[in-house]
Image 1 (cartoon, helix red, strand yellow):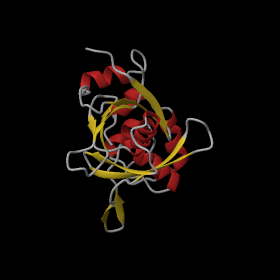
Image 2 (cartoon, rainbow, N blue to C red):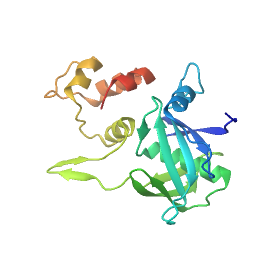
Image 3 (cartoon, helix red, strand yellow):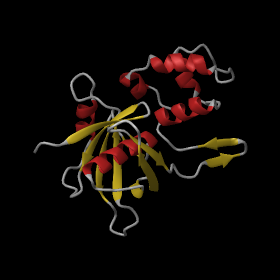
Image 4 (cartoon, helix red, strand yellow):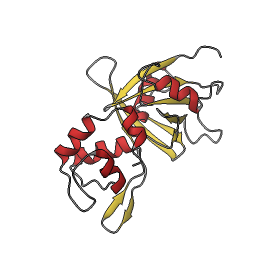
Length: 199
């Protein structure tokens, strides 16, 4: 296999490897993603993002493909899209301040602007329409994005009972777990734990 050129980016607590592949010559499969993301034997990352040219219909400038650290495909990641934005701007393939990216979850608009620190950008990502069921609103996202958003907004987090039991949090589904307990638990998670818990 010929060498790949990847860059590493950080977006609000997640780190991703980004492969700019505009000619579509370097697909990323499950095994390659797992090897690259391994924090002990690889480069180490939460996932690998492949950036290719936009769809033929012209609905977006770029296409986003994400493989999680375990090799599984993901439809969307807000922090991953922020990393894509920084990589695409640095490579000169988009100019901003607004551009569209095709994802498996649909086309998403990204708005960027420079930040004060060198090499840092501010990026806002359109995450799609939330689904309302009564008073509950669900948003399709990676577990890490959903938890980060809920903690920032001080929202209640509903988690499957099997996850709570395996997390060592002393709570059942009907109990409330305060955000500080959850933050402490999240701080002690590692990559292997995130692969175990199905959220």
